[in-house]
Length: 264
Image (cartoon, rainbow, N blue to C red):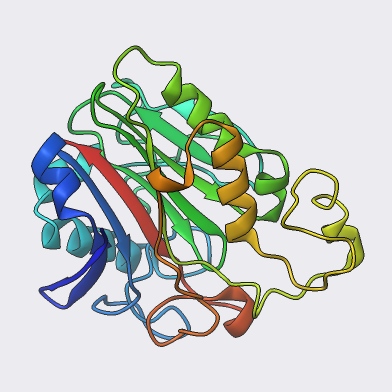
């Protein structure tokens, strides 16, 4: 399902068949091909981690140009990402929120998930170990992009976004695409963190010292009506692949790669 595509030095993981069939484009970016200096080298897409805002804006330009949507740059819409469970609709009135870091254009406040039925409104969220999830309803059409760290995952943000899209009228075709994130191999946590999951997710046990956020997201999706057959997991651990992805757990101060979706 996923294809790794490199164009103009930018590498993304995308699903060409989804775009061909429905006009829905998705992209999980890698960290190479940008203009940011270490420790943000090089395609850092986040305006909140200390990178030069002009570099972040240029990196966003490069990403969007590489996937052929540079003409929508001013409509790029981002969220504040506070590790919560708020999912908001990116209406035409909100399009462009957070698009310009150097210009101080604020993102959608307080949200860790965005969804839209608007054509030509690219949604972008940023990651460096947390789980990126893109949801698509081709028959509506509608898309959502969700940022799921452990707090958001425990609060059910992915299932909440799935329910929002599932409740829209149209065919039952909700599909989930899960991008690169830290794996249980590298995500050692304390018992207090695990306690948020051990009674709700059968894949998590109180005896475990390693949290499998991918399994949590998969279980939440399944419980929300997205079966395993309509979940596509990239299966790449960010902490094990810091040459290709940003990892806060592995690198400390670092940049953020992105998950983007747009209806064309």
